[in-house]
Length: 375
Image 1 (cartoon, rainbow, N blue to C red):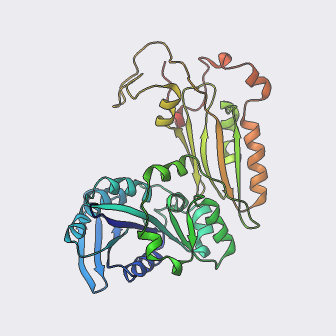
Image 2: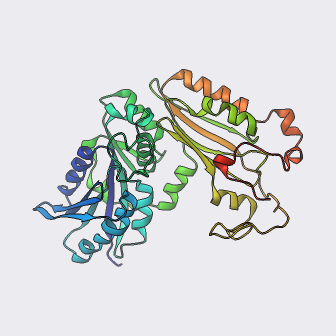
Image 3: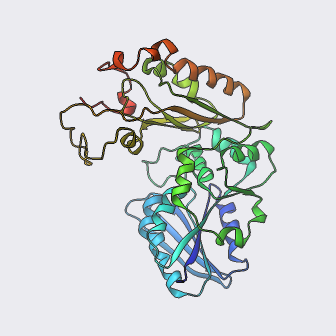
């Protein structure tokens, strides 16, 4: 069997936690090399080290300063060198604090011959996670943005790191923070203390990008606790477009993490994504899911380059979507408010009984979020 070097991605919003966990893995039972990356403005600093000390410390100027581009153009290609050297049994890739491990995992899985992605590990401080995840600070306000185009909230970044991880290293200093992390972690993720992450748990497995992505598409709700809760709201009925616009803040505003999908009867071909964290809410059409529902390819009704759709009959909907939101929070009053607003936004049983015919050609106010509908 051809040898394959395991690579672990280590992510965190806290560079001290990230570096501490990376160092712990580097000094474990295996001969391990660590590549740490910090992004400041247009400069990516890469530090390569193993148990003997620092092997390389390089500052790289980037034309386009974003964490994804930095990892794609500079960091991941660098992994080929330690893999080819054959000196180490394992590699730790410590990514910039604002990096999305989901994106990096996909980049890495197809870019490093002779290696494989073992685990994605996220380190979290229970004492700060509640404010980070549910507060309204942005990456820019924390001085963590590499470019003015990054308008993400801290909560959006942290949620992506926790929900995608195979292993979440979180302490129990703050029970609310710890339970909040447990609510967001995937059902098959390992939750452990910072000091209990061992070599075998990290390097002795293979990460599956496909199965991890399915966790994002269909999040698994964990049993609620006295400190944090998760509710799953699901119905075959769509949202009434007007009532959704009127009540969207009642569902999406506040100290919540929300994700899921929905649809509206004025756009029966469109499955829409719902993503909220850190006081921000984003909704939009999920192109892949919408194509699957209608049986359309990317060129049906328009080219991949955004060309205008070809006039013709509207394709039949082969399967209607469902409306499904998974909401996590810490205040019980928020849960009651969200449940009520969700029911208010749905079509009533009487409206649903009339079918989709009354909605054909009817205007809605969702163009700013979902785009203009094809003729």
